[in-house]
Image (tube, rainbow, N blue to C red; front, side, top):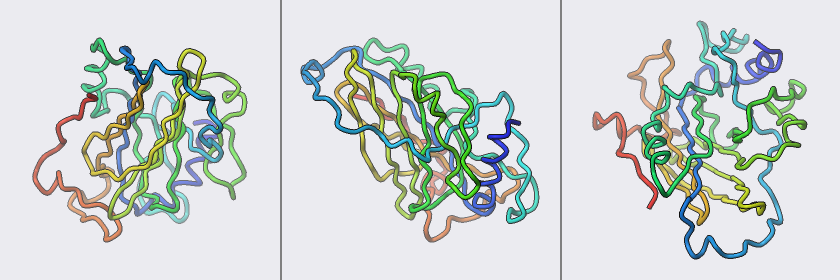
Length: 249
């Protein structure tokens, strides 16, 4: 495991020890058939997403073994923000439908698991269509991981951040830019969401799909109920494992 990954785990494991976990899945795609609105001249962006203090997904071949910090619960702790293999993604079938469509083309897809950090402590996860590069690591007193300045010098086709805000009413922030024929356009939105549902964030040129699933680490009791400050898993209560996917119109 790299030094960067070791420091990342040391910073995150203590807060992850007793929190409920979620699997977050994101698919970003572009429209192949542009609407009349998409054909217009887009104004130059005056600002871009803030990538400072954003979390980079861990992209090693195998998940690193997590050594609990002194504050962590006994036993092996799952690794937060590890990029899951595509076979573990619940949105894989939806991604395939987009890929086989004549109207849409996926640009990036990613999934990871993370504990709840509440609302004020929500972590912004950096995503890009560029090949992953090792992140730079700040001092232990700072936020988890910074985007590598050398990687930032490259120009991705699509790039952004996703932040999961866990409360009784779960929310998600998405903030992405898409390079449309040399002109960057931006999709920024905050929205409440329900567990297991696929949520569609729309722009005339591209779109973002987000799905959040409850996930129980192997050493935890799957029957444990949600806390007063966490969303109720209605799919679990009704016996449904997943909601029907929402496809873009």
